[in-house]
Length: 139
Image 1 (cartoon, rainbow, N blue to C red):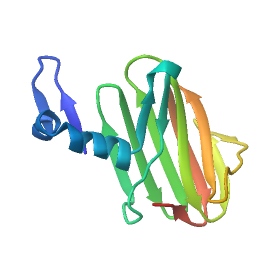
Image 2: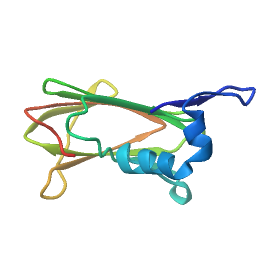
Image 3: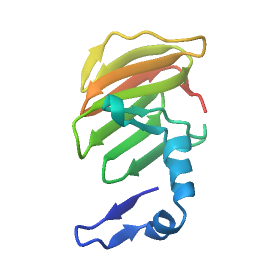
């Protein structure tokens, strides 16, 4: 789902949903794409809850754009903030063994939280994450 707004105030894409059904947009942004701003902490949490059969997804609004793609054993997540610099926390529920994690092209050490295998990655302003694994994301 993409909804863009031009500088003159006119909208492109799914503006009719955006303007008339804010509950649907909020459910998609928070429930499916997992965008959770915490303004008091200057933090954006990205916790995707995509259906398991979705191989790629992207969302963009005036504050943030992010995309997720799964190809073979590789999961790529890219996020860019368009406004106020803030911390970004990416939380991915993974199934299977994670072989490597890289942040902005550099392999990083990682650990799994909890019994369902949640990977948590912090970055400032933007992130580009790749996970190499033998399985897929949880729904």
